[in-house]
Amino acid sequence: MFEYEMHRMRAADLTREADRGRLLREARKARADRAAARRTARDEAEGRVSTPLRKTRFTRAA
Image (cartoon, rainbow, N blue to C red; front, side, top):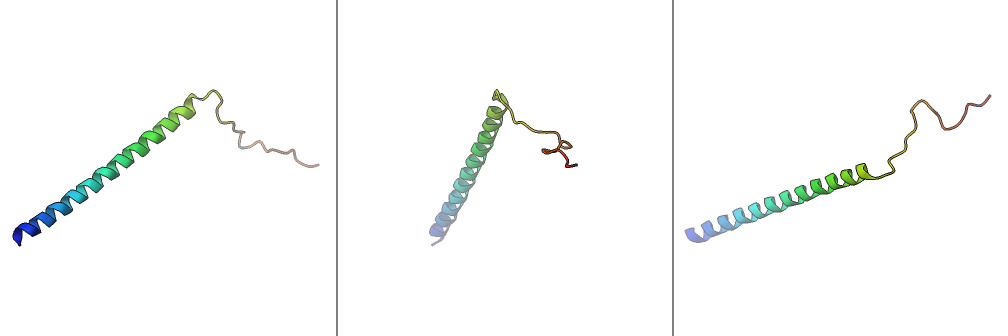
């Protein structure tokens, strides 16, 4: 019975280790994807257009 319990504990440890590894790989991939998106956005010929904060879109009425 002792060997069976040791086997079950080891199997649970391996499952937890695999889950942590999977989570780590997913996090690294997400981080790499975000970095690639930033590089792509930075290298684009046309950037984001923004207007000054104080300037309004319409002129004031008389």
